[in-house]
Image (cartoon, rainbow, N blue to C red; front, side):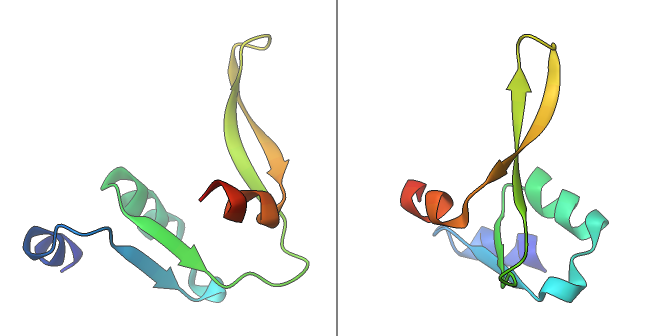
Length: 73
């Protein structure tokens, strides 16, 4: 259904999800299809950004401040 909607609408589409319904398979599919998503996070939620560490030659996760993410967008 989301792919059908995207074929009709070329604008940026955000998928809103409840924080308790974050299904990993759905999340991975949304990312692989290029969808952006948003969820309401609690105050004590910790966000991480996947980065590549050239010294370790692998991907790592670093904590990200929500205010920093909002400034980048």
